[in-house]
Length: 305
Image (tube, rainbow, N blue to C red; front, side, top):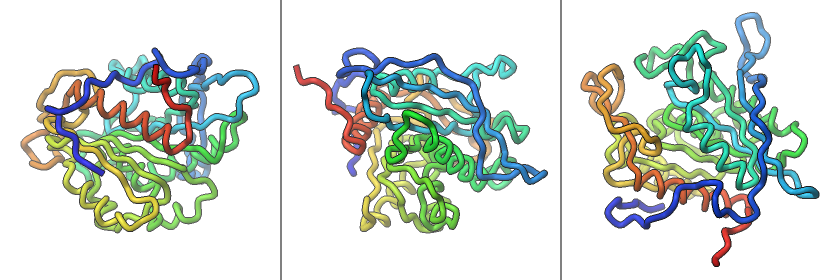
C-alpha cells in the first residue's frame, strides 16, 4: 500500500475501450431483477432491480469474470429519477469493464425499500442499513455464480462511498453471513468507503481488497481506512490502498467540486461535505483499478508496443 501525490502522478489515460488488448464486445444492457438474501416483511426475498452488462468474449473463450457494482448513498439514477436512467459513472465504467472481457451487474438497494437516497439521512438513522446492503451483495453474487458464461471463481465487488462500505462489510469474515456464504468474491474494490464501522468490528478480509481514497475527503476520510488496512496487514491477503493528495469525495466523477450543506454526516457534522472531480486522481485510480483486476484475475496485459 502506498499514498499517491497528485503533483507526481503519471499522465495515465482513463480506463477506456480504446487501445485495449483484444477487447471483448458487449451485448445491449438487460434490465432484470435479482434476489437478495434479505427478506421482505412478508418473508420473500427482496427483489433487487438490476442492469446486466454482458461482455461478449471471442468464440471459444472460457467463462469470463464478473463485477457487481454497488451504488453510494445517492442511488443509481440520474435526476429526474422518474426517468430511471443509470448515471454515467455506472454506464461508462461498465463499458470499459466489458472491453476488458468482464461482465458487469449493477443493483439497486434503495428503490425496493421505498427510498431514493440516503445521503441526507444521519448515519445511525438511515432507512436502508448496511446489514441489508450486505445481504443484497451476497445474494447478487450468488445470482452471478449461476449465470452461463460467468466464471464463478472470478466474481468481484466494486462500490463507491456507502457502497464501498458494503464492499468492506460483505468481505469481512467477522459477519456470520459472510462466513456462511456459499459464494464469495475473489476480489473487492472500494472507492472512498466509510471504514469506521468495520474498523470497530475488526476487519478480517475474505478476498484481496483495494481501497481508492481521497486525502482531502471530508465525508468519508481516508485515515480510518488506512488504520483498517494496517490492522489487517497480517491477513492473507493484506488490504491495499492508494490515497490521492488534493482529492475529495467523488474524485472519480466529472462534476466540479462543490460544498453539500444538506449532508449531516462527515468529518465535520453540520458543516457540510465537499464532493467533486479531481481529474488526475480519477485517471490514476482508474489505472490502478485496471492493474488490480489484471493482476488478481490473470487478465491479459496491455500490449507494450
